[in-house]
Length: 102
Ligand SMILES: [Zn+2]
Image (cartoon, rainbow, N blue to C red; front, side, top):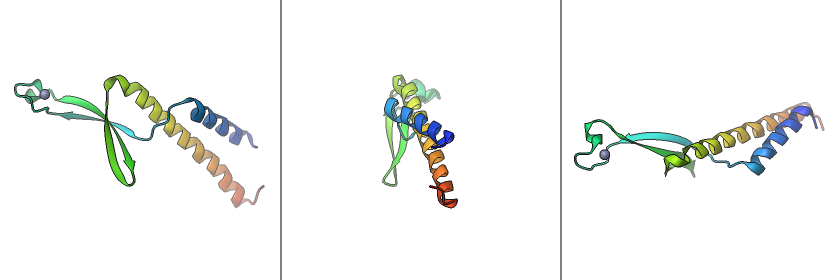
């Protein structure tokens, strides 16, 4: 196994075995709540966080508590990195096929 392949595989193995992996994007929405005399009616809108992801071709979303923001961002970043490493390994194998290497 080549050095780049070994490095990508061990980085990927670390992510898959030790980290949370979450596909989706965090989105902040600002809205008016509907309560009379609330500050949001004077322009100070309420901000809520949502996790947005696609499932079966449809977009879905969950509300994410602020206390969870950092870990959800970390899980998303780790998922993204795992995808990047898988793609990197796949490219090495495209080359093997193209060059007829074992
Ligand atoms: Zn309000």
